[in-house]
Image 1 (tube, rainbow, N blue to C red):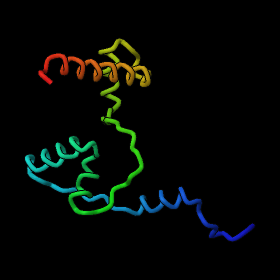
Image 2 (image 1 turned 60 degrees about the horizontal axis):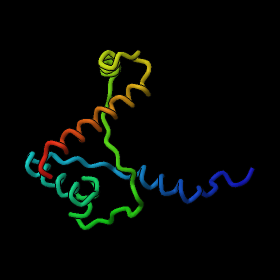
Image 3 (image 1 turned 120 degrees about the vertical axis):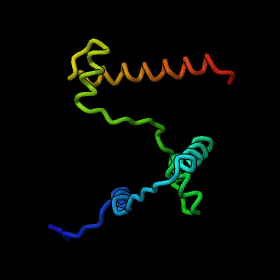
Length: 115
């Protein structure tokens, strides 16, 4: 067998660097959090990237997949399954229905605003 400390592929090295980073949370007044989040949204970046920009730190140039997340417990899946008349184990179909609800929410919001 060759050297046990073989060099990791470059892509893995980047992941290793990211894994060594420490996430820092800030407890700010709601107005300050809103302002930073709004600035991030207006700039099309994540709140984390907005904070890095404010602090003068580098921001990754690679494109990020824009997505929204929510944590769903087994109880949440059970409630959503009941709402959509599905089985709680059918999590993929539940996810599709949730996505439909989110799209409908935005569509309704846009149709009722003077944007």
